[in-house]
Length: 72
Image (cartoon, rainbow, N blue to C red):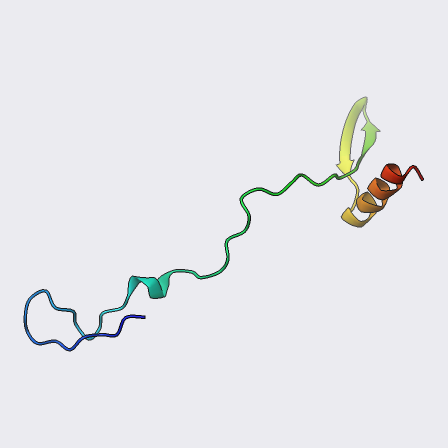
């Protein structure tokens, strides 16, 4: 962190109100740029001769994926 300098009246010197631009930088860790695709199951709902694919809730989708991958 930079400390403010005293004003001496000379042009170009830093005022006591100087704030380092680094103080405003968000220091939160950045999320990874790439995340692998996670499997998610859907089911087909047919109505009026149209198929509509709807997602299964995450918990059931994870159970379905586990059962499918282990052959249960």
